[in-house]
Structures are given as structure tokens and as C-alpha cells.
Image (cartoon, rainbow, N blue to C red; front, top):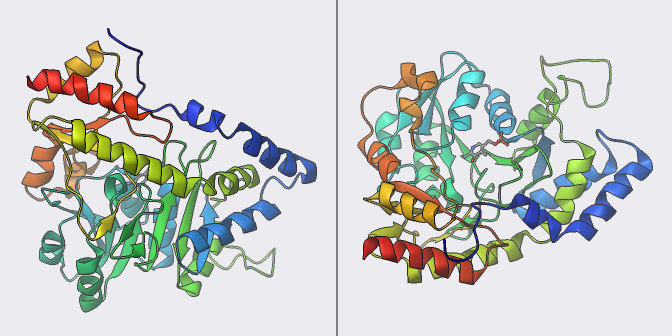
Length: 368
Ligand SMILES: *Cc1c(COP(=O)(O)O)cnc(C)c1O
């Protein structure tokens, strides 16, 4: 092994750089003791809505809950179908099933691996109630086509923005284009908490109000002992809100660092190991550095030998997962072929350009 090991993701190292800010944040919460629903929650919600260039935000327990709460608040449930790309984290499909609706899996575009608007159009049927546009790997789905398409059919467009904090498409921020958007603050995301966290953002105040109620036991906003809806508990801890407000300050800088690293990857990787295409209308935030390679086993063996971390996002498309097999209706060739070829390389703001150069050099040797 030549050179130092490079982890796939060093979340501890990312947080270490912010130790002073995080110390101030938790001490503030400790001083007032309102660990659920403290003032830091409201501050974070206001800042994050503003960051997403939309009206309102409700903070919740995690990103999966955020998706489920949007679907429930939009009245989607048993008898409804929700169109979902096959190549996504399973949480997207889990949320659809959790409200009693059926996920209808569709294929993705071969160059970007984002949901294919033509496949969405072909899958719309009498039971379709919504489309989940997953902004995968930090690049937004083609909302220029998905917005008019869903409007034409009277469908809810829901953004799964768990991997796209700060991304833009045609100038529009992730979270500002659909009926509502779900964000995750799982520690490894572009904006990560020190634990689980999630948010729903939307311009639709009625929907936001329903999400807020559902996430807090269906409780009436102004009458504590009146439960108007059958809700649940999915609230963000005050501590996580305080940490996230502190970290939000650095999100744009971090995303810039990710873009710089991605440029290094594009320059340095061999022809047999190509990063996914960037749509010219898109400003991605590179949650993951995903490449396609025909000889993945050899690339992985070389990375392992050099002590370089890697990941697979995702090796099995959702419609091929045992949990969702009952919803599979036929092959989805683009997603299935991509699942065999994709490889995620290290990507985070605390990675150095020299480390990316070394990763590229290792992969160039595989190609040689
Ligand atoms: C992380 C993620 C989620 C789920 O978020 P959690 O906070 O882990 O529940 C949903 N969708 C996508 C695309 C994700 O990457």
C-alpha cells in the first residue's frame, strides 16, 4: 500500500473542524433545558426555509418520516399509486408503502441516472396520485419537464431532496419547485446533524400546517389537549436544530469544495471510469462522486489494495429488493445495468485535492 489510507467518508473529521461552533450550540441548549421544541428549532426552520428559497419548513425526526408526512398530508394513501425511480435509496419506496399507497417504479436516464420524465409520463395511470422526484447523488432531477408533466395530470410533485441540499436546476433551488420537499440530515448528508434529523419544506402553508400537526400527535396548534388528526411523534431534537443552524453557515462553502473535487475527478479519471453526466441546466452539490465502470471488480480490488474507501449507491434497484418485489412489473433495463457498473468514490468537504489525485492515479493504473 502506497500512501495513507483514504476513508470513504470521515464524518468525525468533518465535525472536528466545527468543534467550537458546536460547543457553543449545545451549551446554549443545556442552559435553557427545552430539549424538545426549544427556541433553536424555530430558528433552524426559518433559516432552512430561507436557504431553500421557499416559504416554510417543519423539522422532523428523519428524512424517511419527512417523505411519509408529506404523502400523508397530501391525502395520499390506500388505492393510490406513487411513481418512484427504481434507482434510489429504499427510503423513498418505504415512505410510499408506509401510507398504504403502491410504489410504481420507473427507469432512470442513462447519462445522469436521474428519474426519466418519459418513463414517468408512460407510467401515469388512473390511480397515480404523485411523483417523487429524487434528486439523486446531489443533482436535481429534470424538473423543467416534471413540473409541467405533473401539472397536466393533476399530480403532486414531491421532491426527495435528501441528497441535494443547496442544488439548483434552471436556477431553482432543490426544495422550491414541487408541492413539498423532504430533506434528511443523517450525518453523512451534505447538511448532516449529529444524529438523525429531517425536514419538510413547502410554499403551501396548509400542507405545512398538516405536516406540523401530524408530526406532533395530530395536536391542534393552539389547543394542547385537542388531537384533531391521528398523528405520530416525529420531531427534531432541539440539540440537533442548534447543531444544524451552526452547520448551515458552512453549507455553501462545503458544496463549493465538493464541486472543486469533482472537477479534479473529471480531469484525472481514466476513460473507462467516467463520472455521471452533469446536465448543463443543473448546479449539483455532489453528495456522492459516482462513476460508471465496466470492470468494477478490478477497480474495487485496486482501491482496496491502496486503502481507499468506496461505496455502491445502489447495487440493487428497489424493484429487485425482496421487500418491494411485489411492486415490480417488468424489467427496468437502465437502472439494472447501471446497478452493475456504478461505483462511489470518496467525496466530502474534508477530502484534499491531493487525495483525489491519488485515487485517480490508482484507477488510471487499472485502466493501463
Ligand atoms: C438518506 C435518504 C433518505 C432517508 O433519510 P433518513 O434521514 O436516513 O431517513 C431518503 N431518500 C434518499 C434519496 C436518501 O438518500
